[in-house]
Length: 252
Image (cartoon, rainbow, N blue to C red; front, side, top):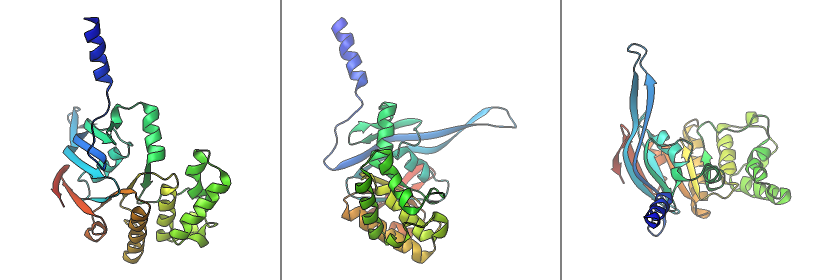
């Protein structure tokens, strides 16, 4: 009997699954709901933002998640990045069940294996472009001289080498987003998650940003998952997943 109990405990502690060749992310039966109190009835009510979502993302591919505002696409992106826990379901990264991992492991995943690109850039206004981009490397206690060289090389690729000494307030929207992309790539993450990366840009700037982002994704062999409601932006990606009312509506 004692032997059986020990075996049972070991089985419960397993947090992984077998992966198909080339699989980076695997989402299974994902749900996310929020609770809010109804001020009129004084009862707690629940709204489901994500329902029954299952999908797979392969290494080195670019995937666009499309849908109207409020459909759940940003919520899904936050879950993939470990910023938000699902109500039910699993997210596997290279076969590892992220939300059954220890807290320290989740922090490491967000810090070193995921690069985030936000619609509103999230640059620190009191730091120069150079300092904004080098910050992730300094948090990992990287070599200063090597980090400076890496920032300069990335800035050159993103066509903002002449803006490294500038502050965010002195940049155009397109330049800010290019700096944010550079910062996201500093720790050499395998996965880039971009939430409406051209949402605050005009058409011309948005096109430049997308060409640079998808170009670097291919050149550096990264996996990109991008959220947008713009079909032209989606066309830059290898395939598109459309979400409607929290469910996958179509897979291209």
